[in-house]
Image (cartoon, rainbow, N blue to C red; front, side, top):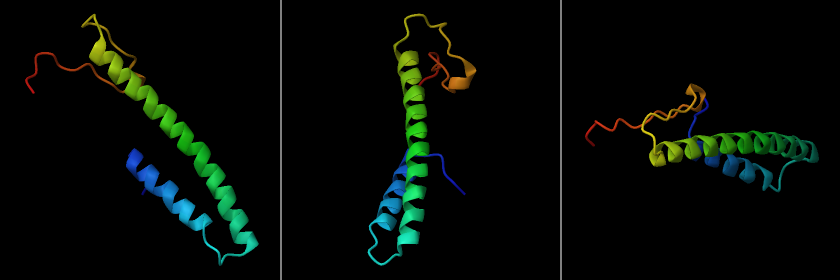
Length: 86
């Protein structure tokens, strides 16, 4: 099962790099790994861009001047509970 953490994405990308670094694979296998790498690269960029949006939204919520400011639900970042003790 795939995980949703950036740490896991990082591990997957490094594992793919190891597969590309093998000297003992056929040209056909290498082409397959190159195509897999290109697909993983595209998806990884999308995931990182999405994480950047969520991080920017969290920063916005932390720095907001109007305590009633809200983000669209799709962003997935709730306002901190100002009455809640940490």
